[in-house]
Amino acid sequence: MATLSLQCNTPLTGSVVVPGDKSMSHRALMLGSLAVGETVVTGLLEGEDVLATAAAMRAMGAEIGRDDAGLWHIHGVGVGGLLQPRVALDMGNSGTSTRLLMGVIASHRITATFIGDASLSARPMRRVTEPLSTMGAQFTTAPGERLPLTMTGCCPAVPIRYVLPVASAQVKSAVLLAGLNAPGITSVVERIATRDHSERMLRGFGATVTVEDSPEGRIIAVTGEAELRPQVLTVPGDISSAAFVIVASLIVPGSDVTITNVGVNPTRDGLLRALIAMGGNIEILSPRTVGGEPVADLRVRHGALTGIEVPPEWAASMIDEYPILFVAAAFASGSTTMRGLEELRVKESDRIAVMAQGLAACGVSVDELPDGLIVHGRSGDAVAGGATIAAMLDHRIAMSFAVLALNATAAVTVDDAAPIGTSFPGFVALFQQLGAVAR
Ligand code: S3P
Image 1 (tube, rainbow, N blue to C red):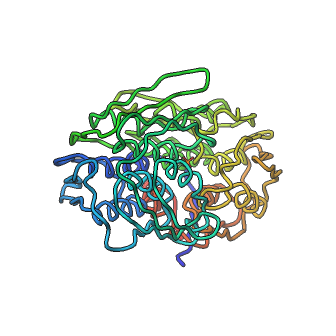
Image 2: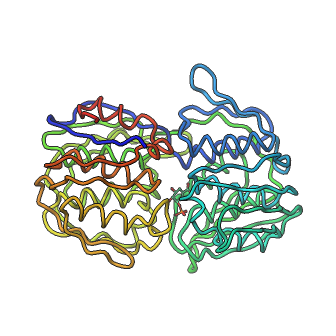
């Protein structure tokens, strides 16, 4: 296992770009594969999770390639046109690939087997098998409705109206993607708004998608037997990757960093709101729309942070950012309370437990709650550090402690940096560019 320890003796300075948005990259590959003709994507994330989606779409008949200029070309087969894969679909570490593709396959008459690494194989799939079974798909799973899993889709599938029991963009998207090839209207009701990249991109590809606010929540409906038109798409930088650079710049004294071309979709920007509420010096510059998504440049400067109570209703808009927010809270004055985070326990690792243990090992005082964490900040002082952290096959755990290490008295080592490649290739090089040293 490749260990990682970042250190820094100078402020972080400079202007950087972060890799493309992971959520949008998965969706671009899937929808491009379901359109008839050639879709061209600029800025696709070339992380392992997204490459797993590309390999699966190829295994089901799409032609997908990258040219020398870094553009991705997808020749789609049309909605309903996917072929039976001859091999098991290896999803690696990627929950998004798995759950969204289960939706895509649910309304195709094909059988597919999903396998994944130890982390993915421990994650719950019932949240998608349940609605997709109602639509007619059949599943054989490992105990506890986990991977390995074999499913047979159904065509014609039954359009459904599904009220999301958990705030999950993956479940919402799985049902909507299944609905693309079902005769009639498939709708999802969400009480709490989750990331809306599927809705935006489906519309961009020409699907009929309506979104309506009702007393029950947001109702998103897709008209089935859709014909998707190929697109030319630009994927902005991933705010979930920018999050590590943002927090690093806030906690390393003297830092002044600009991150250009970051997606700031309001269903994803909770971290910015939370850090600004904590007093973080973050400027949102040149807001613009690119390819139907809000984008901006972010200038972040070091400064004092104050602990707050983060409203639980913000959780969905920053669900992947809590590990790094816990790190920011460790450098604030006072305590930061973060609740409503049950979902964090079923991510790539149990992110509440793993972060609580790691922070405690680095000398940060925390109280673990069933649904969250209270972090008692050190008023900007360096944390003690001096620990080796087990990343647990979780990229965001690895990156969070790599960032914490930038303001620790004794070195903090992440035992396995490999998972970082799932979402943030070039993470170490980017921090070196800003002035950090990697060991
Ligand atoms: C994602 C949705 C979120 C998020 C994941 C990506 C997506 O998962 O944690 O990293 O692209 O739809 P949930 O929908 O399970 O909350």
